[in-house]
Image: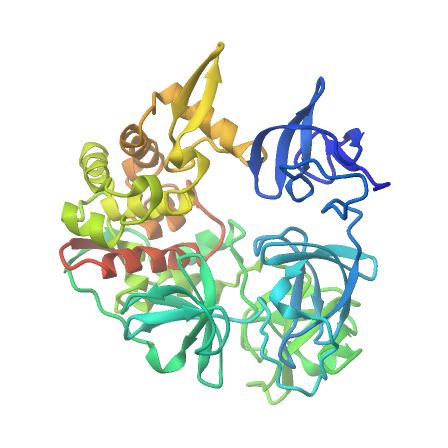
Length: 524
């Protein structure tokens, strides 16, 4: 009471203010995307924060969830030597505003799901709620939390394994992870690993994790020759400003003027390298006064002590060494999971309908029982069935999104139920309505039509152009060999193709009957 909700012209705090809404104001919600809702109030249409809307009208004396919510003070609770990332949005893709030390005091403005909006000094941003505590932790304690700035590794389950909410056998089970599933491991402490798998984050016993994986189905490998050497391709890619989100960045210890045991500023302009020693490539040169976080202290190859550091950049310029590593197929082809970046997406997986419906699509909302539609889509447009299924599960939240369940779209006064299984045309800011409009234009009035019709759009972009592996989508070696420069590439992240394969592997791993064709580059 006494505060107001801002109606903005765009789904951003930088959008112009259209109105200031009193508590209890009735609004018509047109669509919701992320933390923003598109609403109509009288003759005005704009955007408001979804967390400040409620289905029941609050009384004028109620303690509503609007911006009048009382703030609380909490403290960063992560391992000594780790840091909690303050981000611009409630997402791990949000830009990094600051790196918070253990025990840092923050003012919690609001909490929604797994994220808290906090203020630290003059900065306001978002952090993972689970790494906040009401009591200030001792910086010498072995805290149980871990920040999202830590490096991750991929491991595989050796048995059907419970994913739990906390590191205890008495903690509730989030889901059961099938044997052989690839999981992203953030940390391992006292017999427990904090992992992410299929969009869920929790804890599993480390005794049931291994570094090795296998594929059950038939795997055929073919080579694709390119009239270009690996070093030539690396030089071409370096001119396209490739990016990396790695924290493998090092600077000599005498470059840093420490402000605490884990923070400091650069004392002068210094080269930052991809390894500890002057024989490693220079990633970039940072100016004097740049704030850095010290992640580790290592002995350099040149006899000096070096610091492994992070700084105020989520994305950094990749070095030639790093680019060549991800370009070189020999670094990935012998691993059953990472080799899937060479999966030829224009070839059929020869899946069994009943097996896919039972083992992959069961319980997946509108997608349940739709294996035959994916097979038809694959054969019609030449796109691998498992790739389509992986794409659809991701975009629809396992078949439960508004567009997956059927969205009422009104055109010229008549309402149609439309479906969109791959998020095609669903642009940020007005995703549901835009995705529905695209589905209407394509005649996707059933789940089957959306699955089959959407496959044509996916095929036309890269696969039909001959870039029919994740590796080729990212690097397009054929284009580089033909034109002498980088062209028609899906991403600037050098690890993009490598990062996509866990979910595809996990789908294949659930099945006994399938075939895989790998198309592996061969450079001169």
